[in-house]
Length: 275
Image (cartoon, rainbow, N blue to C red; front, side, top):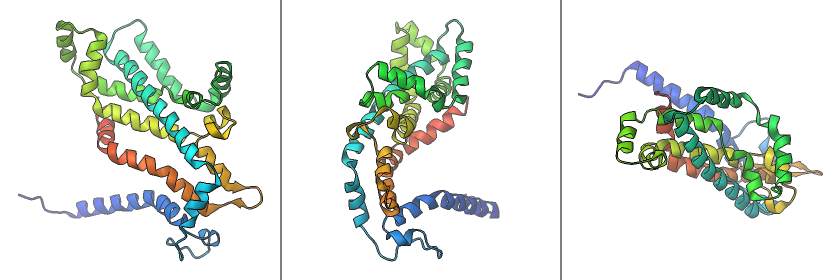
């Protein structure tokens, strides 16, 4: 028998729609502003839709800087980040979740304490290290700060903790070592966490601005976020329609990736909170 709709169900749906609209509004404003004339972006009488659709803004924004090259550089850095974080974070999480070694709890507590340290606190030592290792103006140097993420280790550890110990013990009785157990038993049971880490690491790398700006001084190595600065002209100031157009183009890969990984991302977040 179908459950009748109550007033609380209606109120809950109304609240969800309201908060969804609040969250989506800035993105809608950005999208529609990318088609407006310069003088129509900020006006006293607010109007979401443009009076005249100017598609030329996208062409002008793309030609204002080498955005094709910036796209490739951002994709390279994001790919390095995704691969390294997926491998390193999963291995560290497996060790903290299922292996026994001296000072395990102390090391895990120290690692979690690193989450409160801002990235800017270590940016100068990291730059000096990158300079010493000749990583300035390289794709790996741009991705260097995104190779490992403490939150992703914690997230994957929480999910690995849900894997039954009896299952791992059975694998060891069959002759599997720690690495084989990790590769053939733990990882296949944690697809949602891998997809979640891949998405979060991609977002962190894709949206990073300060480190790529510091570690590059040539256009051929710079990323999309730095490219937005080319749309702020010293004589005319910010070109808002072009900036909104470029921001929309930058947002497209993130939306596509989230659409494909949304199911695993939500599942991974829910599963990590069970333990």
